Image (cartoon, rainbow, N blue to C red; front, side, top):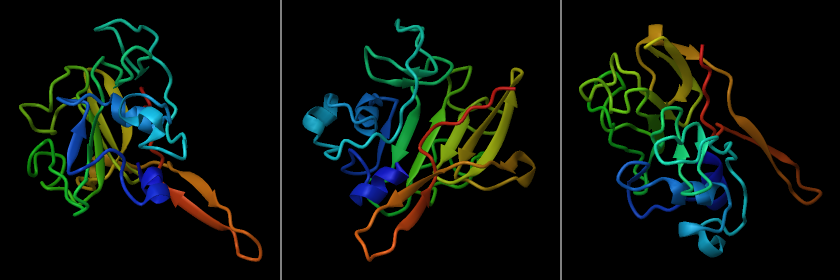
Length: 205
C-alpha cells in the first residue's frame, strides 16, 4: 500500500476509511494491487499503470472452506493460513487515524491508531481477539512499518511487521521492506526510495 501511495499519491479504492476482508471482501483490493483487470479494477481503472505491488501464491485447495495461505483464482480473495480473509483497513480520509479493531489499549495500542494502513488475521480460532482484545489472542496484526510482534498460542509462533510499538518484551526488530529506484533523465540524479514491503510475512516455528 505504501508503494501504491508513492506512485499514485493516494491509496487504492478508498472514498473514506474502509476495511476489506470482513463484510467487504478483499478481492477488489488485491485485484488492484496485483494489476489484474477484474472487479473494481476492470479496465485497469484503479491501477492504470498496471504495476504489480504484491504477488502472493495461489491457494493449494481452491474449494470453499479449504482456501488458505494465498489467493483464490476463483473468488480473488487473499486468505490467511486458517481459511479467513486477511483484513485490511485503509485511511481513506487521509487524517492519519484508523479505528483499532481491538479497541483502546487492549494489547494492540490506542484507538484510533495514528497510521494509514493496518492489516490483521483472525488466527487459528477465526475470531477477533480474545473477547475482542488482542492480549492473549492468536491473531496476527500488521501496520506499515518494520516493527515485529511475536504472538504465540496453540504452539504457533508467528512474526509479522506491525505499526504499533508497545510492550518491548513482545516486540523485536525484523528486517523487511524493499527498495525502488525512481529513474530520472540525465543530468538529473537517480533517487533511491525505500518503503516497507506490502507482503505479509510469516515465519512459523
